Length: 303
Picture 1 (cartoon, one colour):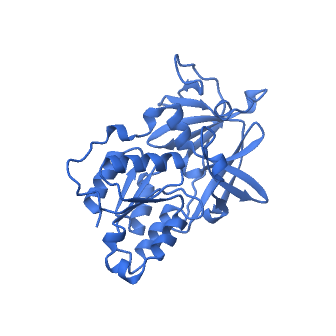
Picture 2 (cartoon, helix red, strand yellow):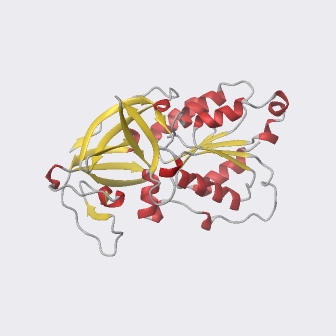
Picture 3 (cartoon, rainbow, N blue to C red):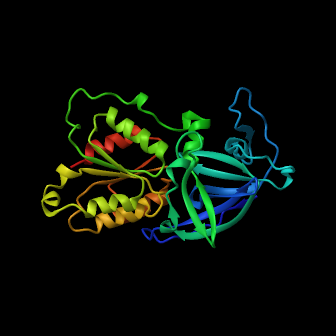
């Protein structure tokens, strides 16, 4: 059993660590911040009436962990001999989960600017599980949308608008909210939740870079009446081109925008990540899938 190496990245530098792994000979990537440890594959206990993509459960220590068969989910071939296969133990969305892969290659430190948004033809429909394409040493590594994968296999690990109460007044209607989320699946769900909760005046972006360009384009009159043009920014952390921490740093370092509330809504919120967000001036930080807590902070903070 091998625990991940602790990586110390200076906050707000727009860098990340990607763990490269393979399934059926193809290279994929996962943010190291999501990885608890990697371990040699071991047989798991099947679970009755589980999703076909759930291989079973195992208990490496004190906690029972569900194992997802990533090859089967992606429609790729299983390894002929699983003796060399690997389990990647992850922690995000407040859950521990194991993903069965065929090998783990190397950890790359790169800038979010080196990750491009995938073409829309590969992000729509059932096959839309790619949030970015990283170019490393002349090769392309596909960054998978693990949050969408988990949501499709086990819907209880995500959120929906079904649980959101419709407000009895229209006080929220005119509040302009910016949502920054790279996952098309989660961006759609966050917007649905905000709209049902009364925040219907929304503008969304898939990267921090796009959101920052929109904020930078505000003219003097719009900045003077900032709340009428944007009253709050809700941002993910992991995003191609520019991450949520770098976006927060830019907003809070700008004399015209620093009063703008920034709420970080991410699957990666941990005590360490909270300290990073606080150091950048984030006004609130919420762990996915706590959508009610997110709306509560928007209620409290929006200009």
